[in-house]
Length: 216
Image 1 (cartoon, rainbow, N blue to C red):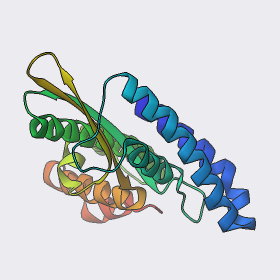
Image 2: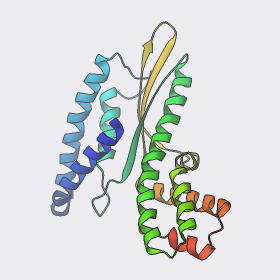
Image 3: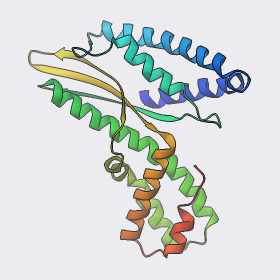
Image 4: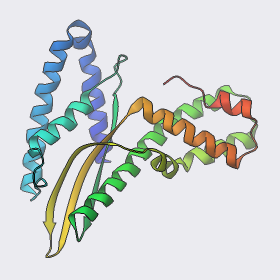
């Protein structure tokens, strides 16, 4: 829920900045930088108050979070967010284990956001295709279960920041934030869902091609 609110805030801020970008890209970049720095300072202060710190040798917390906000504000030529962002949090008895688990949880959250977006596109596509009731039901069922499939196909994500704090006597808590290019995410989801539909349904190839065709 927190990541969705962050993503929605980034979307609102990005859309509000489109007019500035069309008039003066340099002015927009400067404005985004200013906003990112402000948000990063606030968030870093909150994390430090909670006992979080950075890994040895890593960039300062403020700089890591600033990078995250910069990417969350970045938009494409149509004014839509260029990246999908997700967070993960985990506790383990070693730093590496906590980071690995937190990253996997973030990838699942990322996949959930992607599958939600793609589900809306496919639902719209279903309405425009001549699918039987059974075929439409099969597609909807496959898309609803696509989160784990997409997570497995994502590959490398963009790490935005990672912070740690000690929990109890022997455990470490890790908080990470990652990003993935929005257009690439749609293509990964498209291919993953198409493959699953080919394996698990009897829908004709030409119908699947039309169903899975939409503008990014």
